[in-house]
Every structure is written in C-alpha cells, then in structure tokens.
Image 1 (cartoon, rainbow, N blue to C red):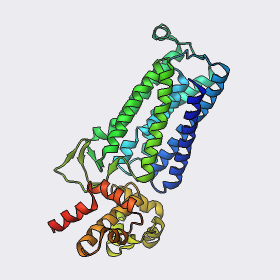
Image 2 (cartoon, rainbow, N blue to C red; image 1 turned 180 degrees about the vertical axis):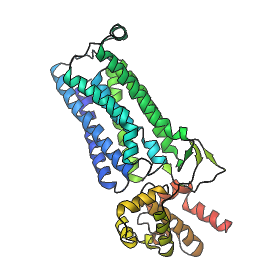
Image 3 (tube, rainbow, N blue to C red; image 1 turned 45 degrees about the vertical axis):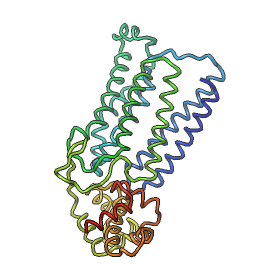
Image 4 (tube, rainbow, N blue to C red; image 1 turned 90 degrees about the horizontal axis):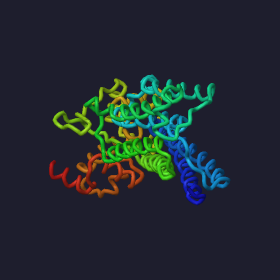
Length: 365
C-alpha cells in the first residue's frame, strides 16, 4: 500500500464529502436524498480520516502488516451505515413510509448491538488476538470473541433483511428502474467484500473495501443530484401488470393531497418555472410539512418530483391542443426551465423520446 495510492484515495474521499454536502443542501423536502447526502459525507469523512492515519503509518512503517480478523472497530463502522443504506429500496418504493418511529423500529437491533460493542470497548478494552479461524474456534469461551461473532453475523443478516424486505411485501407503490437493480448488485457485492474484509488479512481486500465504499456512495450521490428518486419511477398502477418486486399498488393518499390535485386542476400555476412548495402551502393555508407529507402519501418522493410529473402531464395536453408548437416551446410552456431536466424526467417516466411519444399520442387520438 503506497503513499501515492493513499493520496489518490484521500482526494476522492474529500470529493465524496463535498458531493455529500451539496446533496444535503439541495435535498429540500426529499428526506432520502438528505439522508443519502449525510451518509455520503460520513463515508467520505471516515475514509479520509483512515487514509490520513494510514499515510502516517506507512511513512513510519512501510512494511506494516495486518494481524487481526473480526476487528470489532471495523464492524461497528460498517454495521450502522450498512443498515441505513439497506433501507433505501424500501424508502424508494414506499415514499413517506419510513417516518421517524418506523425508522427507529427497523434500526433498534443495530443500535442496541452497536451500543453494547462500544460499551465493551470503552469499559473492558481487552480484545483477544485473532489471527486465524483456528484462533476464533479456540477462543469461543471468551466474551469478546462471542460478541464479535454476534456483531459480524447480525451486521450481515440485518442488512440483507432490510434490503430484501420490500420484495417480501409483494406490493409496491412505484416501479423499479435499472438504477435499482444496479444498486442491488452493488449492495450484494459490498456485502461479499465486507465478509472478506472482516475475515481476511489482506492489503488487496482492505483497499478494495475502501474503494468500493467510496465509489458506491459517490456514484449514487451523483444520481441523486439529477433525480429526486433514482431507484424507482412513479407510474399509475395497472392491476394486470406485475413487476419483479411484486404487483404495483396504488397508494392511498391523504385527503389533503386531493385538495392539492384539485387546486392544480383549476390553476396551472405549476407551469411557472419558479413555483415552490412555499407558494403552494400559502395558497392552501397549510404548512410545508403537511403539504410534503400529503404528496408522499400519494407515492411521490418529493414536491419537486410531483410538480415535474404535473408538468409532464401538462406537456401531454399541450402537445394535443397546440400541434403547431415545437417541442422546445412545449417544454417552456409546461413549466420546465431546463431541457436536460425535461428529457431526463420524460425518459424516466415514459421510456421514449418526446418526439416518439408525441407521434404515438397523436396517432392514438
């Protein structure tokens, strides 16, 4: 492990911290985006700190070697972050489902076990040296070894259960997209690397774990920068169509959402490029928090996603009622102030180009 590699990785870690902060600032009422930004920042911060430590170690001891498996500090760093990240498929497919109480209920086993591990380190301190699997088997009568084994097993089982929970429910509010499958693949790969990282003493696995964690966080942070929900798409449920994750089920919106929908049917104010959640809350004499919660109850990830969906529907109306206008004019009239944003949202929702969609729509009409 050379200083050049550590320096490059440290630079990427710092970049990850910066992207995470940007994501937090841009999240607004999108809580998963906010939490992903926080996670990205923490991952970048943790690995930045570790790489600074390793730069110091390598400078003093170039031939440093790993000597311990089932390192409790490594597992206690992985366990909380992995548990939270594994909840993102659930948060993506069921917007608004994970309120603070439900999130705490999901994370309670992890919090309790992590607290026990931290308390043992702080108040006991002694850890049995484990350099091989034989050492583990021979030391199972030691409390710290049993605790480390329990943390290791639970850190894998808990993360996989959270990750697979949306698929066990069989019904979802949104349709998974390609990015969700990529996320799933990344998570499974990361779990495998974590297992090797915890049970193997190797420079290669150590570096692979760090690189995978940072790339994983950075890549999906960039996806969140451009999309409100990069893992799934809001579509009107069709009872006859099943998805890989189950059958699409229509969310049961709060009564307030029906007021919002009626308001937008009578007033196309969303066609204003700068229309905001604050303006909508003021028009309906409700708080922004209540408006946001009502929108999420209908299956949308945020106000921004909902307003863009309304603009796409308005684009459809305009394409039929004003066939003489070109796509650029329709984009502007429907409320989008960026062609890139329009094309990205349009492709995510309809899976085709606007030109193809308009031709198909007009033929159908």
